[in-house]
Image (cartoon, rainbow, N blue to C red):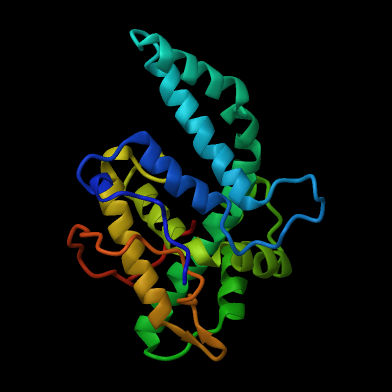
Amino acid sequence: MPPTLNLQQNCLTAPIRLDLAVVEAMMLWPDNEDEPDNEDEPDNEAMRERWLNAAMTRESAIRLDGLPEPLLRSALKLASETTPIGELQKDARDRAGHGCIAGAILRIAVRESAVRRGSVNIGDIIDNVVNISEPIRKRHKVRLSKKTIYNTSWHNYRSVAHFWAAHAASVEAGSEAFPCPIGDLPVFLATAELFREAGEAAKTKQGPVLRPGETVRLPAGFVLPTMPPLEFIRVASP
């Protein structure tokens, strides 16, 4: 079974900050990354839990005034046991660079598949990304050799590349929020779903660009906003 985002249907009608945090955590620490070499280093599932706890702590702190005493004690206990989100953000920034590159690879791949109506070559696309990704290198301090992009950016973030592609579309629409403004979450998820479907339909000689068994999905039964088809006129530099 492919991994599924732990979201509820009401995030499509009344999204909140914690809904975004669920998406953020999976985008930054996806499941298919290799296990850490150091046994004391947390795996990605543990890092996602830390990110969510930090987001909950921040939201609770905003609303401490007027909480009943039992809830206040619980909120303060959670805060004392939670890694501050600031301590997680450096790792998140580094990872965001690789995620942005994975999203760029996917966008180019689905465009080329639609235009050529044939298989695409991920190696050739990575060559293209190396040339156009200078802004990512400067912003996130990531190495941009072809080997690093294939073995880290694409290998580790392919399962969530459709969310990174949707984030790029949100940025191009004028947003500076990660992964999107809270109120835009339904449109963001619908856009990501379009990229997922296009990526799973696009083919390389080795198989689909996105592998259906590993690509992160939305919960079954989600009723997403109706979106126009993806346009493949151009792919802006990430």
